[in-house]
Image (cartoon, rainbow, N blue to C red):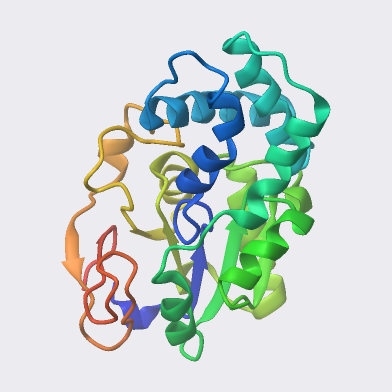
Length: 255
């Protein structure tokens, strides 16, 4: 397949376009300051990933802001810190303050005339408004976990995506390229359903998986990720190199 085969680019938002790891760690600062010896940033993000995944699996109908409140309390409990409801709510509402990667909004603005742009996000509708504004409101459609009543990596979210793209825009699976950072939340379930994917590796110089769980053991057999430059003019974005002509991603498609 070639990039010109695609009519729709579907994006994950958090971790791909929004720097949620910086946002999460900053918003947890009041809690971490209460620890005599705080864990490293990477370890904190790993704790978050484990707790988030467990909470979302247990309560798929819970909106994301409430998930974050529950996570704050769970992390505090694990560190033997007493916290009140106000602190937990403050953490939950911090989503609007999570920064966008510097290159995200310009890249999306460049892509918008050429593709239908959609985000498939684990966020809820109200909390997403701040991120949408930071990204320049680029979306033709926003599909949230609140709409679907489940969280990625559930295949239900990607089945919903395929159904809505067909019903709302008349495009089929073959027309869609799904773009994301998380192998766990996005690439693994998307490729199981036969979607083509492009990997934006925001953690390419860092160890571990940060605020996402690692993919399943068989993920390496599902993905044949390799780096290649998009320089043809079909897509010129800047997610990885912060310059429009230097976007380098790993992808399951060929060029």
